[in-house]
Image (tube, rainbow, N blue to C red; front, side, top):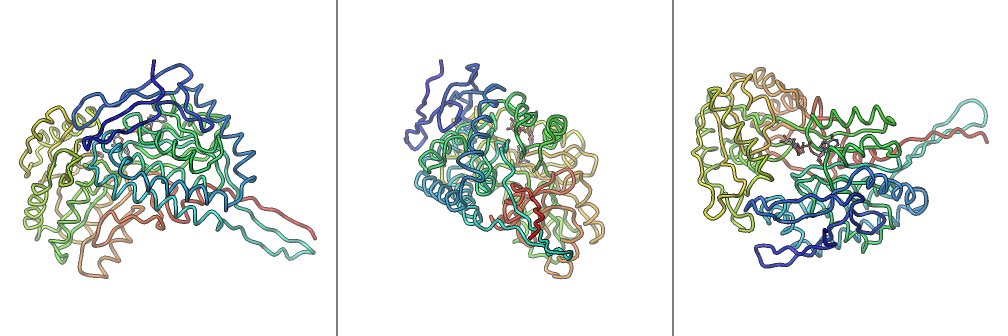
Length: 498
Ligand code: NAD
């Protein structure tokens, strides 16, 4: 049977001890039906760990715990100060364990340790602190009523038990983005990590006990989307489901939510973001940002800048700079501080991305990067050579579909109107980048692009204070910022005679 704890050894020699169970009521226990999932190390392809995988029974148990906590120790029965203190303490504990968490995340996901630590976890700690600061700033308003002695006022109340389903590309960061606003506003949560990356959430759960969250406030149920995920989205006693992942799964979740108890839904889905480079841009700067936009996190990013649109006059110059950047990036062992690109998360994802590359070749796109050799000794790791295709056209699979890997398509345009048309020629609307030295052009184009975030002369800047989310089939609802906490409150109006 599954041992209650496992010990992992990171490449640094560090020993990492981890609970394996389902986390309900501040206790780790085996899954009700004793199921488990295994997770490989994407860098080596070898077995990494086995942890409990829940079923509907575990989700039911987690929801009962979350409901009880919402009605007794959290929700209306907690103060903003208490919620804030627990979030701040949790942030401090995560910060104190940052190196261990970064090595764990890298082992499970394949991303470089430095990226997990200095980007994902630093940001996650800041996210917990940002929402700790907003816990006592949730306000209603008063509305004068003209007839007689009447007053109306509103309260922004917590929604209740929130189900949260997260993906594998930023396991710790997505966990923080989801739970921080929900908990700050007084909700309790049942969160399901992705089955490809179940580990870091267990360590975060363990630290949450020490942070002082009462039992039942945070519950973590690892397992498959088809069982645990589906049980969350169709549950009759979950009041809201928040999801980050693919558009296909997002649609399924919305259908389950609608046909069960009509729970509230927020969806942060896929993307096919355009990076638009005009001839007036600082090309070196644009090439650097555009490279980062598709290579960071091995391209496994919902707002990856996966379609480069470049004005024809500067196409050759920009592509040459991009190829140079791609080839300068070190692909290899993610525990090496010089590595920029580690393996993809899973064998399935590697095969999927390699399939897209093959389809690009078959459909007539021109590969302009040379194929990298897999790092020596890591031949079984899930590496994919960073790839640029030029001569791309709409209708090609690599242009139309989200690839979620280090693969960039390049298309050209003649003028601003064509650039805007092509940037918007996608079912998605998550992110976009605009590079131009003409401020009026920047203003016009950033307004015309239908995406939840448009970066101008930079790419992928994120701030906990700035809302993030999609338009079109990239979903709805916003994370981060004041908008992010509003997604976890509902308005009650009170009419009062005096
Ligand atoms: P997915 O959307 O299926 O998985 C994301 C999460 O949803 C996981 O926790 C998964 O277990 C859960 N899930 C799966 N099916 C479910 C269901 N029926 N009900 C409830 N929850 C369910 O993504 P994936 O299969 O891991 O990856 C496939 C593709 O999705 C990727 O290649 C990529 O294109 C895209 N993706 C996008 C994001 C993003 O941040 N937008 C993240 C991960 C994957």
